[in-house]
Length: 160
Image (tube, rainbow, N blue to C red; front, side):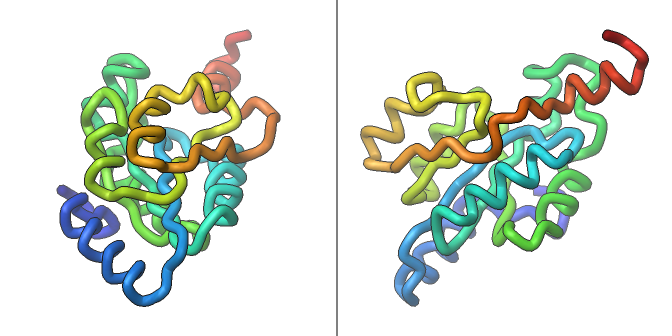
């Protein structure tokens, strides 16, 4: 992985096991592209952190952001996005994933809580089946106000 802020998933799993052994009761995992960090992201991550003792944020790789958002994205590299997200005081660790869903990351890190943004419902979380299988609680976090990087970009371009 590139970027000093990024942690390898396997190494992070060992670190999380050490934290649990030393008293961390609830590990929360949040994820997203975080292509253009805005107040909605901050509120989502602060709410996610309030659900546990440790917050891990899994960022989509550059290739997976392109796949999800189109060829003009990401606006910032994975290393830059990781550095910015890691600088938020509510974030304890940052890792990345390139798979279509977060399933492999959930299986490796085994969080207690899987936090998703307010644009989801518990029934619409793509990894809901694996969360149930692994007995991971799903928490819908953040405010209900619709903040969107794509919408911010449209407004910046003068599009309606």
